[in-house]
Amino acid sequence: MGKIKRIGVLTSGGDAPGMNAAIRAVVRAAIFNGCEAYGIYGGYQGLIEGDIRRLESRDVGNIIQRGGTILKSARSQEFRTEEGRAKAAEQLKERGIYALVVIGGDGSFTGAKYFVQEHGIQVVGIPGTIDNDLYGTDSTIGYDTAVNTAVQAVDKIKDTASAHNRLFFIEVMGRDAGFIALRTAIATGAEAVLVPEIETDLTDLYHFIEQDYNPKDSSGIVIVAEGEKSGGAYSIAEKVAQVHPNYDIRVSVLGYIQRGGSPSQFDRVLASQLGVAAVDALLDDQNSVMVGIMNREIVHVPFNKTIKHTKDLNPELLSMVRILSV
Image 1 (spheres, rainbow, N blue to C red):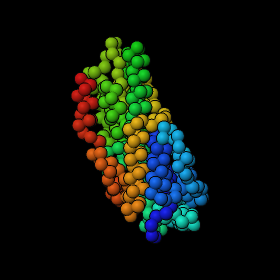
Image 2: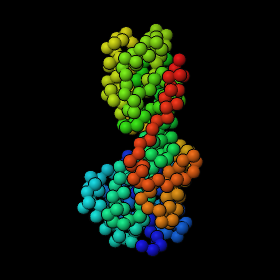
Image 3: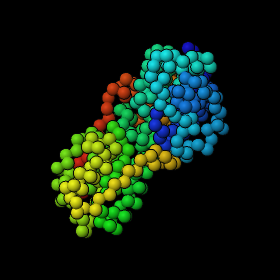
Image 4: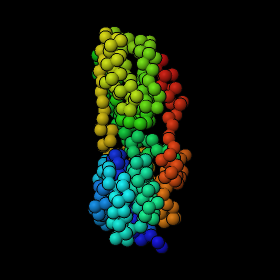
């Protein structure tokens, strides 16, 4: 393949605040190192369709503070097939692009792994997902911002909960992982947190609420991850209401506001670090790896490892929610 002359970059899967900062870093690091940078619009589907444009430094100016992704994102069923990946490879090779940075989550990295195996394209991944569920990195791009957004929303809800002595069940994002829910619960002083990783014991929840919530003189907050196995905030609230019909119960689903907004300074810096590290990895002949950050140091994690292994919740933080709710 020889020395890398052109580097492509795309965003795939769900968007996350800080993706634009990562795009900016990849483009400018590529140019700094004497390479041409190419933006691929619309994720893997855009790659298949050839929506590829050269980017200059000015094209990524004034985007570090913006949420979403200027390259757009999409989930491509076609890229899941060998035929689709062959079309994508042809689009890159026609333009002389043999190095690619993929910003996304485990689904994006799974596709990238097959892409490398089948077509010899050099690929490095950057972890971009608000769920923070990727093995091999302490934090993913967008996670810090999503938690801050959730915390600000819960703080506002607590005001009305206190004013009316209500018990609120607040659902945050986290289809398969409870990282957002757990950190939000601690930061907002919630009475309980329900996460996908731990099966909810409704009997324990009823008992806990009976001990810690008095509808006459207190308010309560329970944080629920959307992937919680009992059916989510509405389902749990309904079950609690059946057992305690005298409770004034409300449900709030925060939803997609957690994906949007200007990224926090932490996510901007993290994205910038990982963007530069991804280009460095490509120039160092790294392939089929994710660049992450562990103990404040850049690490290279093989796609096979980050896809295969799961990232566990910190049990000490889980215990802390119960301890601090006394």
